[in-house]
Image: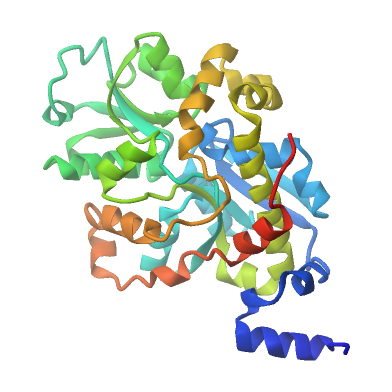
Length: 348
């Protein structure tokens, strides 16, 4: 028995548009093949699946023509999609919660990281005598960009130890060689960043790590649950208008998530642009090894992840604590479920 297009959408409406059988969804034509993705710090391992999907041709395999614009931090990438110059953000999941508190509805459609994969380190020169978080008061802390996930991480850490964001000075240092230089030159006293920046500084003895979320255990110890991190998020309107294009994006990203876990750190290091290595392939490989556990193996949001993120944001953001956040509107696993059905295994 054949199913008309109208009947298909009637069925989709009854079951939820995201619940249509995979074969039916995959058979639909892309609403648009051109997609512009904004990212804040593309060379970071936090966004590694995005680079792999691009370098391995996974977006093209799905019929997509993807343009990726790299910004200094996640807050800048967010501004691009809210302002209409980009369609999708490769950024931190918690931004979807922040946006909803302002009446803007954006949704995570596929996860890149199941742990924040960031750490805070103090300079072994300017803060050699560091003893407790209280020593950070009055200090300059480097983050990828003010308002980014790294600054949120610092704010959470400060709040947990009785300090306010105004007790420190936030300095945007980016997510690459500039961040390394800022710490080494004394422009900042401490830094919250991600790999490979962290591993480069740590290997050289430039920083003492005081809080680390590159492993699941440490993340759960700090946040009290799974803390979702890098993801692809976009407006609910984009998803509604472009469900098949959204599915294609998620297919490519899930395939990349799985490839990274299968390939291992050494193969991954050979797949990324040389500029990502920050002059030291061995340290970059080590940073990928450290981060593998924190990377999503399948693009799926952990069940307790959204609530953990909300609780963390409420700790230092009065607007969010006062808002009535509907977490169900900030994420979905429906696309990732279908992508995993399409790509149960990925060959290296």
